[in-house]
Length: 407
Image (spheres, rainbow, N blue to C red):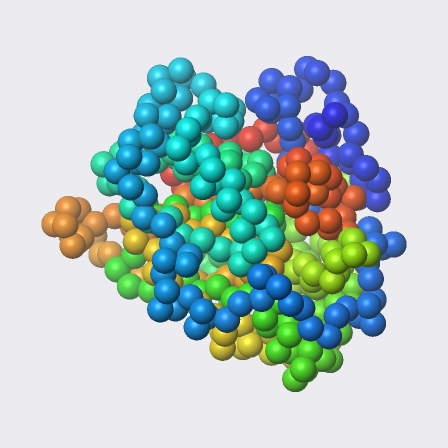
């Protein structure tokens, strides 16, 4: 039975009383962030010298061949998507309760199933283009986006408030306050990182005046390069002595940080695939815990600082660059693709866009999706690997919500 109560990080999640199902429309609760299971963390000596297969790619394979990684929705596909959204909205079902059964796509289903396999076991990224987001209101855009998402995975909460529909938007928060500010709520540059779920999706509602461009890199290509040039960096990143900040988004009785590695071997003796889990801001923000007389965790070592620098620089050197336009949806696998974003500047008050309409601030809707081991996802060295809604951020029994705009 799916977990409805967050359990201690050292044990499997437990079932909960049926009375709590009303807070979780599909009966599933985000499992949350946890440290790895120590017995499943394999030493650097077990890691391959080189990874091969479709998860290893170079930007030149795709830069001049958009047909290999993009698809523009046809008018017939848009009509099918629009009709499914209209029917769902007319039924007045809460958006947190949307499922594939409630969002039928007879024509697109096969494409979405193929995409899911490619995201999990293939190149790990894709871009849809051409949704008429300016013609639809935020509710319909959100319904379309989440409806498509149901074909790829299970929505997990992205923050302590239970947001399963997130919003990447500059809310004027201070990006230097990394111990309590999530960078997606600012216009600051994001270094190469992964998010806290198996898959991440971004639907562009409005783009910025300048900047905010996206770069992605094959984790396994970067790994191969560094195994040849800087094996010490890979060893450092595979050593489970890193601390990661939870920024106060924790349930009662749990620690404010997680200790683990950045790179793991998949928990499968037949696999040599390397899984990555890393956001540099969640490492550098822990200074409040490792300085002064009350220090409780060690500061970053010189080796760790060097590894972070080399990893980011290598990602940047082999990244595929893309610019999201309104109506584009980018999907990325966090397991084996790192992504980043340039800093951006929004339109000034009173500005108009290229269509002569009032310009709006950059706005991307975001999904975090779980692709559990039990349904073909990666076998991760965490106790919740088989949970349908593994990963994400869960605080106590906070229910899922779908705000239609940033808040």
